[in-house]
View (cartoon, rainbow, N blue to C red):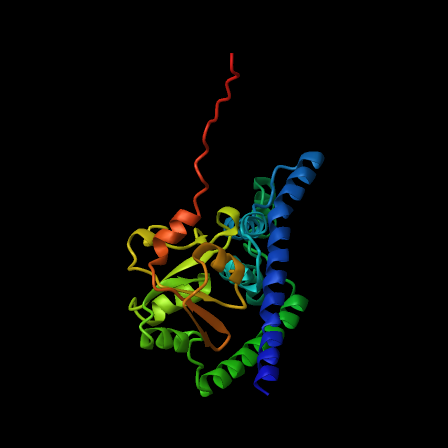
Length: 300
């Protein structure tokens, strides 16, 4: 039942995705619209061109830039890599409020300036000034207003359901307590386990994030969003933790440190323990041997 409830929650959140996509599409149209009107005005010899909305334009460009950076720069190794696209959520919400909110409110997100000739003609004919921004289409407003209100009501219900249930503890808090209880206070682990154990124990257990992408597949310090100076400051490390959900192979651990003295299992995790300090061993194993120049001389 909890699994079905989580799936239902995730599907309902697609409403927000649809709203953000609709806002982005409308924002792209707002960005390109002044250029189309400018080309038309030059072709027809008109003088006045409707300006765009600067805030909407910046939000569209920011979303496009973040998506491009995510595709080109972020190493997509597993589902957790999607966290790096998080800025798009805030930008998409702001853009949806700017564009779709303007339609619901009854105003366009840009103003239509009247030319001098049009303004003088309007004043001479009826003595009235330009009424300003034109209201949005009533049909779109009649559709969007109840749809967004219904989506907001569904989100309010989901918030109440989530608040009524007891929150689950952090996933690795039991692992952190087990390590501290067994006096394993310094060691190596993949990225997620290393970060969570450090935080859950308040620094009582020091765990360096490592990968198996070192020289010849040896274990090496993780250099992505981690403290690269930690190997020079951490206490002597005596264990290596591997997780089935992370890419640190057992063979790479053994190739770097040799066979462990003890092996423990805690849930899905495997903890290998050595008596010696593993920090200098890792530093030495991760360095390629120095090249030597050999000269050959022929006798005579």
